[in-house]
Image 1: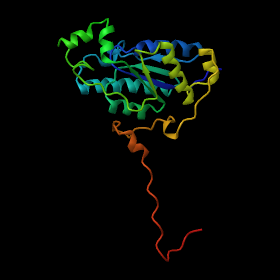
Image 2: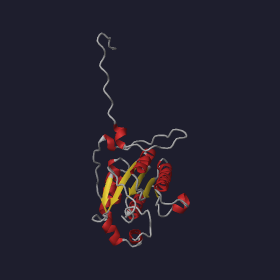
Image 3: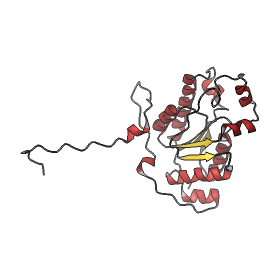
Image 4: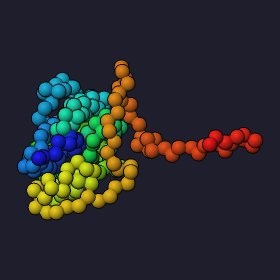
Amino acid sequence: MPSTTGFTLWLTGMHGTGKSTYASYIAARLRQVGRNVEILDEGEIGDELWQGLGDSKEERSTIVRRLGYVAQLLTRNNVAVIVPCVSPYKTVREENRRVIGKYVEVYVDCPTEKLIERDTTGKYKKALSGEIPNFIGITEPYEPPTSPEVTIHSDTESVEDGAMKIFQSLLDLGLVTPDELKIITGKKMKANPLPKKARQPEAKPEKPGKGAKARPATRAARVAKPAAAPKKGAKRGK
């Protein structure tokens, strides 16, 4: 019987790094083992979710939050959600991590000069000539993840090799089973032990009337202060 664990696989990276290619590859193989899979590709569902929004930082953040909201709904209903999205801002990606809970971040990296070389859409050339303003990676910054679950260098790694890194991470986090991966990859794979901070948290409910606030991950891992020593003469409880 196939596993019904839902999760969100969030692929971030600049335009043209191969995020959609990885999404399609992973989705096809998860469907082989009976998983319910949904791809939320920002390039395909924009008209339905954010038609009319522009490309300012605030509008881009709104787009990523909307994708995160839909991903969270699907994830909690046991769907494996794959989101190939530039999502250039770290604070908004971390918001989605907290809201979704079972969230795996994949950074698809590639040097900008390579992206310009292999660009078939002409967008980088237009951005460099000023025809496309506010283009991420050229005139607007892309903020790479500091501690993604997976980093793929798409200029040097094949799709198959990158996908194996993703599958290993899903196995390590308990989001897929060794039996599923034996069918998908033809290999017997073992989970690697993870430190506590790398384990997947459950999504926390939001307070009524308030949106999720961005918070650096380091704050969530504060060490509790030691209890104050009892005053002299005070009786200790048994």
